[in-house]
Image 1 (tube, rainbow, N blue to C red):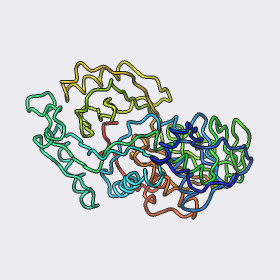
Image 2: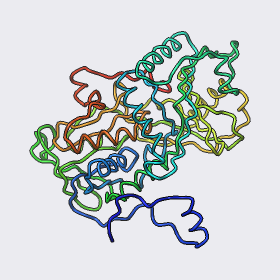
Image 3: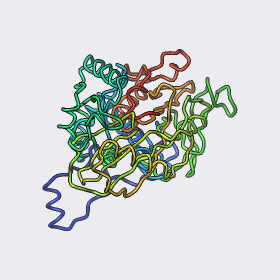
Image 4: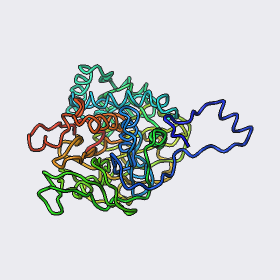
Length: 431
């Protein structure tokens, strides 16, 4: 069968036709045969890995690519985040980078021919102290200089945008103002994963689920088994067999340092769980995304009416993704400080994902001291927001063997050169 170069079209006509004829929909992506050699192997079947594969094929014509994931596509951080997107960061490097991602998210439904339900509903970060308000003004000025729609608004305007918020001055944590970012919003995270997977598959990329990487094969390095600085990648060892490949890309988020260690590359990353929760659905009443760094909570309402909450990362570095009662109790208390009217709502479930945290809260992207081994890691709580631009830029980096200007500031070498990109001040909540 001839290989497709674009996904099959989804259309209203096709929906009606299949409804009348009762014709089944085709598989969204193939179950490819196993191959022992590829030009590129990407470890991690989340939005970063799939976007990299898609843009390698779509933008650079590199299609002999395998994406391997130890579970199913989107089962890691891509399926465990709160699906908020924005570009109102603190550093010029961060603002330019995330704004490109927001641009790609804006056109994604058309580009991938799949409705990813991007909702540009605005993003509001509350300030409860004078120091927080100064930081909001700082971020607003940085944003404006980069051409980003972002400004500080007063409590009266906040109340208009989110009537359920308690903006009275006699609360325990009075709201003094907010950084308002109209282009921010939410998007359907599983649709983003499916869109990139479908697009990559149509270009011929092989997506191997339930394929765990057990080792990265190297030669010529200064460490054991030819790994480490000075060496080069020759392939990966997986639970289904070895794959020969001159290029391996690590897109594994919470497991980033573990995978990098297989190639003899040390990363300045610790892994922390980040919990989230969702309520029962109710009538729409919260039209914007609301964030409070001081109260360690962020909340948005889905199109189905559920409230989706997130909080700060758990303080202890661990790979444990179990939920805790402490999280639920603290979350409920903080939310009710902001919106006392929610006291009768019921939480339906909570979950956790893993965040790969760097010392400066910015990612690590590009080549490593092991030739052919690339990383797209260190995302902390920002990973989903950066999925499209990371894929686009990493694909360019791999295809051209040159680091694109947009990701130059995020090189691994900055931790030895001292050129850190401090983004902690732009975090939605404290870390």
